Length: 259
Image: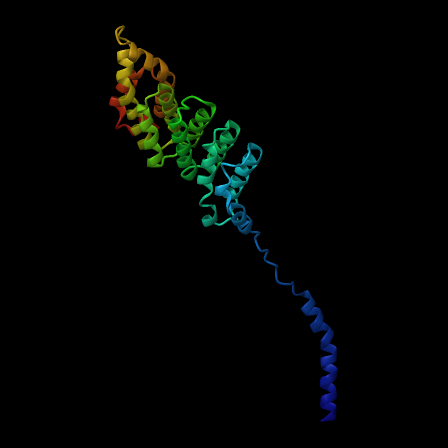
């Protein structure tokens, strides 16, 4: 019996180092990195900011806009935390200091379609309400809307409504923005093409009558935006809106013609 126990002890003693060596060969479990989150920082930054927007000097407002946009683009910030950011940036866009407003317009374009586009329209409405029809910020806001070319129905309807605005400089900018939809789906491009025709083909026709100075003046103000817009939407150049109308009537149901 004692001999059996002694033998077992010897076997275990011999196996011990080998077992330890085998254990050492097993790789350790990989460490899964915990993704960083900036959400608490964003929450803290946004607290009380709404009450400071109109009081900040430009030197503080411009970097604030940049910080807000960075938080919007940060995937580590929660959606519910980000939710008020576009509206806050739009408030900076309504400020009268051009550098601040221009930074906000740029920021809204970076925020992108949907929230960015809709808040750009908020800025445009504020600018037009105070009679800024052709200033640098107004031009920048329409240019951003053109580049975004947001197919959202609310955005498109708002731009089309401005085709009938009281100031031709605003009308021209709205048409130019619609000209940015050249890469939109075919059905949307067809719809916009026809809207441009319906809104301006009568003006173009009347502008050729020597007695209709109002039509001549209006067409002179908007033609440089209208013709590039139909070219972009139709993917082909036109000599005038009469030619564009003829092409539309002939090809409105021809999907291949709209490719």
